[in-house]
Amino acid sequence: MSQPRRTSRRRAWTALTLPALLCALAACSADPATGGGTDAAAGPAREASPTPTGPPGTLFDTFNYTGADDPSLTEHGWEIRTGGGGPGIKDTWSADGAAFPSDPTAKGGTVLRLRSTTDGTEQGTTQAEIQTTSRSFFTGTYAARIHLSDKPTSGRDGDHVVQTFFPISPADSSDDYSELDFEYLPNGGWGSVGPQLDNVSWYKADPPDRVHNTLKRRLGGWHTMMITAMDGKVTYSLDGKELFTSSGKYVPREQMDIHFSNWLIDLPFTGGPRTWDMKIDWVYHKAGEAVSRADVQKTVDDFDTAGTDYVNTVPKP
Figure: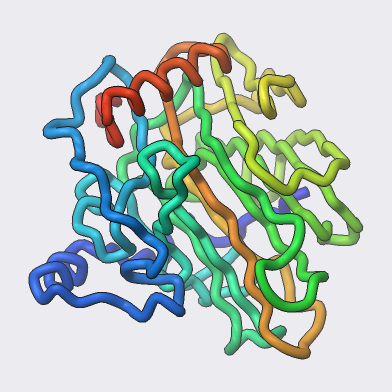
């Protein structure tokens, strides 16, 4: 189960806005081997919707971008973490871990790939995370289609990797701290052997005050993860099956950001490089409404049929 995050989620983030624009004007690109910039496997992006119109109170994104330096990524309210802090191996966050390779089975034809790498040393480790930049998300339905990895893409198995999807308060010190976690640990961690999927609802980060549920199951592959926060309770579902419900004080108390993260708890061994990949097909949020999995999927399919890759009509605070 997740350990408390000791540092503010606003710690040392570096937005890519100006560098992205300069890079685009210069028609530069990163080395595809690093997993950053324009991925070698990325195909031509579909023409984006002319405006982010759609049903009110809706966020939808298929992550149809050309790379971490795509100006549209910033324009659509996403920020790739490149600053310091934890969790995991502190100060190892890198934009090189974010790429958008093509996938003909994915909505929009591309996926967001978050790649963490390590050789067992701090100097040889990078972690990957992306978050929304607008603190707009509170009650309602959160959903994402995510590919979890049971084994490294390359290298020796055994790392204590954590693959996550979660809305969270912008600051750990907030009096109304809120955090709702999906965390997959294929090899366990913090004394657990895994594999396991943890769902955690937080009331305070420090000292930690939370409730949780653990599903002991190997989950490599694609899954639809949903969090429904409505009517004084939070329900976590995986592929349409309810896993855990929290209530009382363990519900959102303030607006949050949405994060995806692929990180390492510790460095259990050296002896060669390893690469861990987590992929996201799409993300969906409906503000202030409980939406069934069937209706979420229908909405996602309808957007895709219409050629819509991005919608954001969630009111800003």
